[in-house]
Image (cartoon, rainbow, N blue to C red; front, side):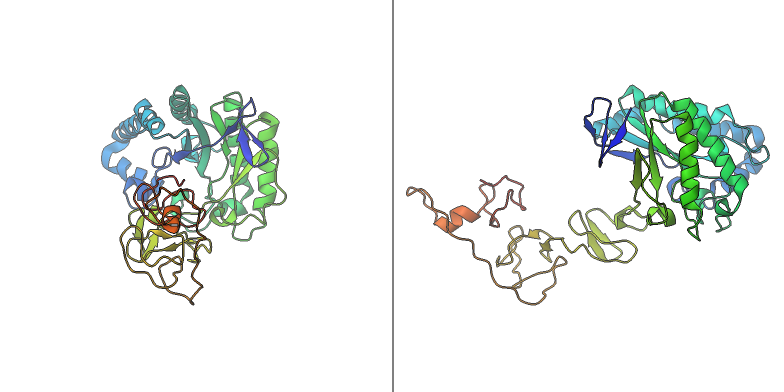
Length: 367
């Protein structure tokens, strides 16, 4: 069973486990930007029921849920070096609004299907309640057609979620391949006064049944604000949803330009306020190669002539002094000057910044 140990997740032997994975969007929680339909999931299902009839609609979704995610998909994820899958699900798989608190076995059978497929290949599952009764946020991905999150103002909706998580905890409390429970995806409590007390109520209810599994708690306002949650809870991971621009439907290639801004692993900006990362390195304005030494006259990759100094977006700020690396003694048999031998890559010949551990042009280790 995984557990929290300081800032790490560890297994039963105490070894650190790094979860690298994907979200299984579009399966037990159908989102229109993934599945390609207009509206919310329940609206889409109602339209298909009118067109196909009750029997045809049931047959369609049975087949859809059977084949969407299989052992072959898990094998592919493992081949990519991944070891976890976050499984989003809609509460409607577990209960009907006309019969609240009466849980349906079919929803659990579907979860078993994915959890078992992952476990057979040594992949962890994180169970993510993505759409709650009453809707926990104002958008379509919580199956909300109203743009009002009624979950936070109606006690009966909250009671239903507590009951559902008690049942989920009971079913999977002894399953070591369930990494943990993500009780609410991207909550948006507009007033910010309910989410903290409700998380504590929910944590007590789950821990009474299953004291061991990790909780993954999203911050308020779509998992971006945490000051309203109170003191940290034990054995809990607080999850931040900080989306990179290329991951949005209107994003461009990665690395590449999204919404007019070049994005790669070294050029990061907040998607909400566009504040750049102050620690990002300067980059060539032509090919975006990292410019580690402001004294370089030209880009080591493309040869583009550089200004005296660049900021991380290839612009020229106020001039800065040129840095000249100190000469390093070399063998008397070398045909290179001391400075060139000490500051050039042995793989491609590009100049190396003082103290650089690898070449930014070709990746060859320095030294």
